[in-house]
Structure formats: structure tokens, C-alpha cells
Amino acid sequence: MSPAAAMTPSTPSTASWSLEEIARLAEGRFVPGSSRPASPDTAGQAALGLDAAGRAAVGPDTVGQSAVGPETRVAYGSVSTDTRTLRSGDLFVALRGETHDAHDHLDAALEAGAAALFVDRVSGAASDAPRIEVGDTLAGWQRWGANHRSQWGGTALLAITGSSGKTTAKNALAELLRGAGDVWATPGNRNNHIGVPWTLLGLDADHEFAVIEMGMNHAGEISELSRLARPDVALITSVGRAHIGYLGSREAILHAKLEIADGLPDDAVLVLPHDPWVLSRLPESIAARRRITFGFDPDADWKPTADVVYEATGTTLTTEKTGPLRLALLGPGPVLSILGALATVDALGLDVCALAPRLESLRAEPMRMEPRRWGPVTAIVDCYNASPESTRLAIEFLGSLHHDGRKILVLGELSELGAETEAIHRELVRGIQDIDLVLLIGPALAEIAEEAEQLPGAGHVVWRAMREEASTWLADTLEEGDLVLLKASRRLALERILERPVPGPLDPGEE
Image (cartoon, rainbow, N blue to C red; front, side, top):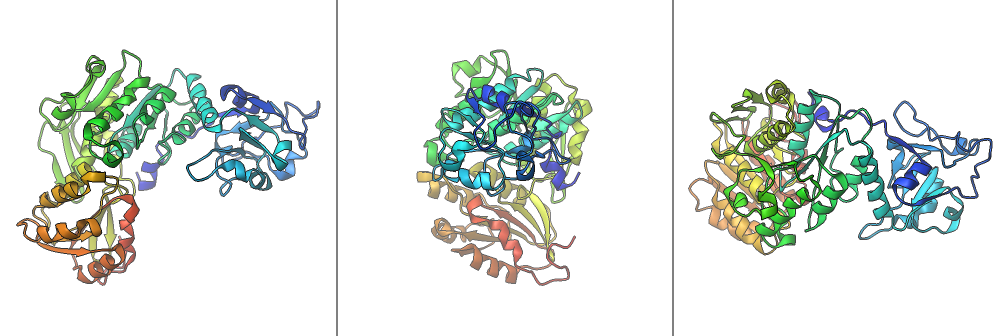
């Protein structure tokens, strides 16, 4: 399987609705508008029909020929929330963000060819357009997704959250489940209050399984998403200190993650890490649930039954039910996600032993412990994001590898740590062992870099304030055979370091 295949783990959606159905599911009303009236001859016949790509076939040239009425159908691929990517024939959903309101762009949406609108207020040309009116577009959007999901009770829906490892677990679950039936999974990173309803709307009659990723920054968000999705099984991949700057403590983060149980039936299984710190703090309502645990702890239900073999080219994981699996994933972080996925499939009562070999074809998502060739060196790019725990695991992985060349850690600042920023960065740097060269990037690491120079396991330590100057220094320092790990939060865009050519026998990016 190619990396691209790993990012598209779903059977394509054939979901579609009439505008009247959308209005009903969103608990709003359909208004035909006056600029495109539905005549008795055409009402109920017009359709935002599907083209070969599964998108609406109605555009500016056809809308005037066949009316947009209550029976006009909208395909899943023909729903748009952004005028910049809207195509002719789309239904435009006008959502609000912290700094924008899509209702300000309704005229632009119509000019771009929107066939109908999903709104809570209109003015100007939009007053004459076919539309679905709701009291609040976000609430209506979420009701549409939740009520659509309720129509597919036969689909086993699995929800995933966690401080790290969500996407790897999602891809692993989807790959495992594809061996048992058609799967629908969260496209890309649509895992928030807008993205989860969008994912739910993709469910159709062909999907036997759905894998829904749920992200959060604040308390209450996962509870809302879980109640929308109503999962049959829920997986918490990890409980770390990501977003501690928003939530204040790891205890608060734990309770926020446990909100995923709010939408679970009482007899449903919750899969969670076998972490003594976590298990000792479970509220009574969670402790009384059916649970399956996973992790490296010998008391976990799903755990390695032999030493995990980590290499720069892959990992060998052995469990009691699967035997040895040769994974093309790197490091202990992905291994934990794989164990969580196996435990979740087990919770469904499926034959894990038969399905597990499918994991050997799984590839890393871009920038998630992703190996790349960079001129004469190998880079492991792990900077899509960074929690303290995933960073610690990545550092330990690099230090543990047997490698003939130099091992180099490029560590940028971690975000959203609040008052814990300095302490967490210091803790991470103190954990560096058996690494030849450490490049620290960002103001928060300046003073810590001086301390790191005294650490016996950190080798040579260099600090740079900005990514650009760090990139220049690193490119001039690299030697053939080096192994470089890039780790930082998303805002640093640390992968751009690889854009600078490195002199050597191979061209940048050559395989």
C-alpha cells in the first residue's frame, strides 16, 4: 500500500439527499426562492445529479433549464462550506468561525454556481435563491449529520480520541476492518465540531463499519461529538499533556477524553490504555463499564508477548493472538496505536488473528514518523504535531536504534503547554540518550540548550532561534549516512527544513 492509500481508508460514499430531506434532517425548512422557481413540470425532477466523480452535475448552465425544488438531490461530494473550493451545483453551507461568517459570502457562492444555500439568515441576491433555512447553521449542520447517522443503525461505528496516535489508530482500524466489510473513515483531519458531522454525512447503505476520529482543545467538545456520533465502541489512544495550556492539568485532560463515553450505550466497550495513572483515576461511571486495555504493561489485555524490535526500516510486534507482525511503521508511538486498534477490533468480536496481517501493508501518514530520503541522509519526519508523550517516545526510539552513521535529533518547540512549557521542554531534553547531535529550535529552548550540553547522552548540542537559520546550519553539517529525526508542533512547519538541498551523492528526495 502506498502512503496515499493509507490516507484514504474508506469505501467511497454514495450518500445523497433531496433538499427537502436535508431540511427535515437539519430540522429546518426548504425555501424554493424566486430566482429559480420550481415549475409544476420540473419540480421533483431536477437533481444535483452525480457525475463520474460523484459530484453534482447541475451548474449555472443547467439550473435555468431544470428547476431546483424540494426533490432536487444533493450528493455528499456536492456539499461545500468554502467559496474558494465551491463548484457549480454545490449546496453551500454558511458556517461561522471565530473570525468569519460565511453568510457574508453568499453572493460569491451564488456567483460561483451554488445551486442552493444552507443558511440562518439571508440578504441581497440570496433572498431569491433556493435555500434551507435553520435557526443556526452550525446546530443545523450537526443535526443533519447526527440524524443521518441514525438512519444507519446497522453500521458498526467506532469512535477514536486521544492526546496522540488518533490518525494512526484510525488508519489501522480501517485497514483491519476492510478485511471484514466496507468501511467509512474520517477523511483527512475532519475531527472537530464541523468535521465530525461532515464525516457522519458520508455514511451510506454500503458501509458496514465507520471509524470516526474526534479531536478537542477544551472540555465538553468530545462529549458533544460522541453524542452526535453515538458510537458502538470507543477507543482512547492516549492520555497525555497535549493542550494542557487550555485544560490546566492532566486530570482535566483525562476527564475530557473520557467524555467519549457520553454517547456510548451502557453495555458498549470502552478501549483505553493500560496506564496505572489513568486507571486509578477513572470515575465510577467509567470504572463500571466493560473495558479492554492495551499497552506495554504486562497486565494489559492487549500487549506485546515478545520484545518489540525497532529498526529504522520498520518494527516487529508480536502479540498472543496475532503472532509476529512486520510493520512498516516506526517507533513505540505507532505500536501503541496498533495495539489499540487490535483491541478495538477484538471488542467487536471479529477474528483478529485473520485480520491482523493486513497491518503489514499499512504505511505512515505524511509527517507522522514518516521516513524520507533527503539527499545522502535519511530523515524521519514526525512534525505533523507533537505532544510531550509522543515526543518522548520519538526521542527514545532514536536513541535506541543501532545505526552505523550519526543519529541527529532536530527538536522544535511544543505548543499549547501553558505554564508547563519550560518544565516539559526541560524534561524532554533531559531524557535524551545515545544521540550524537541535537539541534534545538525556538526561544523556549534557549536556556535549556545550555543545560543540555552537560548531558552525557546528548552528544553535541546546538540551538537556533528560527527554523530558517537552523535549516542552513543543519544542511551544511550533514554527512552521508546520517539519520535525522524531526520533531515539533505543527506551527513550526519543521518539514520545510527538507526543502534545503543537502550536498551528497543523492539528489534531495531521491529514492
